[in-house]
Amino acid sequence: MRKFIWAAGALGLAAAFTATSVKACTTVVVGKKATTDGSTLVARNEDVGAWSKHFYVHQATSNGPTTYVSEDNGFKTSLPKTALRYTSTPDDEQVNGQWIFGESGINSENVAMSATESGTTNKKGLKADNLVKNGISEASMLDVILPYIHSAKEGVQRLGQIVEKQGSAENNGVIFSDKNEIWYMEIGSGHTWAAVRVPDNKYAVIPNQMVIGKLNLRDSKNYMASTNLVKKVKSWSQNKKIKLAGYVKGTVNYSKAFGTNDKTDAIYNRPRMWDGQRILTPSKKQSITKKSYTLFLKPDKKVSPAKVGQVLSSHFTGTKYSSYGKWKAGYRPINVPTDVESHILQIKNNVPKEYAAIQWLAMASPANSVYLPFYTNISDTPSQYKVDGDYQDPTNTKSAYWTYKTTAMVVEAYKHKKFIDSSTGKKTDLIYKDVNPTKKAVTKQLKANLAQSDKVAKTLSGDKLTAYLTEQNQKNADYAQKKWQTMDNSLIVHSNKLAPVTKSKLTFNK
Image (cartoon, rainbow, N blue to C red; front, side):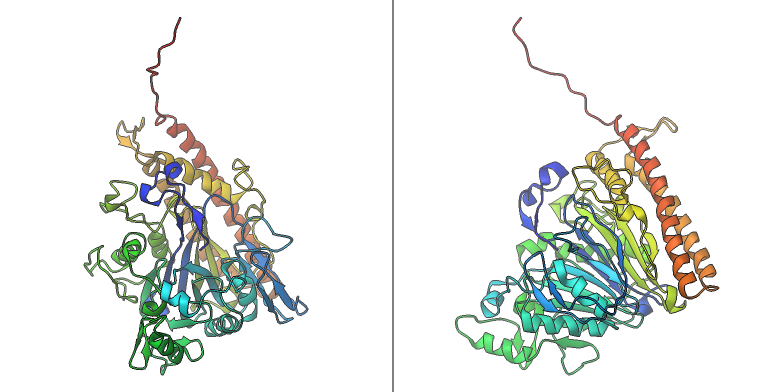
């Protein structure tokens, strides 16, 4: 994800991260044999700051532009004329007519993409193959890849070709999925990349750290990499001025060659892997201070979208490391106040392909928001997800983003404070009094709505089906936002009980 200044003082975060340029996001991927219904699931929190996000659908075309020039960094590439329909969650304002940072979406071939999970290239890796200033970056990635691919593997191949030919501006992790498989890809340097197929019966929780290890490139069903990667890494390892790590007896450990595993990772990255694995595989007892974790694990129980949402909402919830509690050691949690949206991209295998793709979208911080199940075979997105307006107008009640962001801002301000609940006479806080009950009720209703709309969808086809799915998205968006706005009003009332009252110690001359 983008670099930004983490204003820790304003958000109540650890002083160690105050005014530090950091990279954010957390990724979760779950293979189809590890999920409750045989879906593939790929998900990620987008952590940036305080600007709003949109949800858009871009319609298919057979006569689209053949050249793309990024308004972010000048990256330029050619495009096919024919583009598929696809959804995206771009920033709330266009730059010279161009949407940037599309982040996540599903196209009409039911191929999902999430971009990106930022990483860091080590100094030797940069010496070997430095990043390219006007290479492909997160800002443009979704829009030049997702409309032109027909499978997850094809997504890796298309992006890989661009990286090798035109270079990458950033170290990034990118996720692709379809109904059959998931591929996780890492771009570790200016022109190299590697990708691994997620095992069908396993999951991974990935922080801002390169995690693809030893590559078995003879196994093309499960591994891919940039052209002549092994030969190049071997050459760089033998170069006395570079001495790149990661090469051993004809094989490459990609993360060792280009990634990091240092004191920063011990605080900022590895604890998030520990937390996600703690939630999905509680039977595996591990220390939060381990220097490395197994990338792919089997979950103790089959994983649902709701369970993925629990992982992405975690702030070390229920442990002594919780940032809502003692926050022992100050580890960086998965869920943070700087989340601007969280998505879970689900491709089902138990329903017809016309309504098998669901983009679960939670605006702002997922711990204080709710995941809405949006069909992607649609002609338009809900109106409140297209409302312009940034931090200069956070009171914009039409905007879905600012409705859910308001919740996060109030809760974060008072998350350590309790008040007396007049109905019970007991101490409580804003999360247990207002947020959790609303979240539980709304989630239950949305799940019921989705089951019902799937039944109706079976009876429809073509334009009628698209119109129906579009209508259902709008109804669910209206329902959830209305419930959340009512809850926000309650939050504000209850937060007044927590506002500090101080007596001035100043004296004044008469």
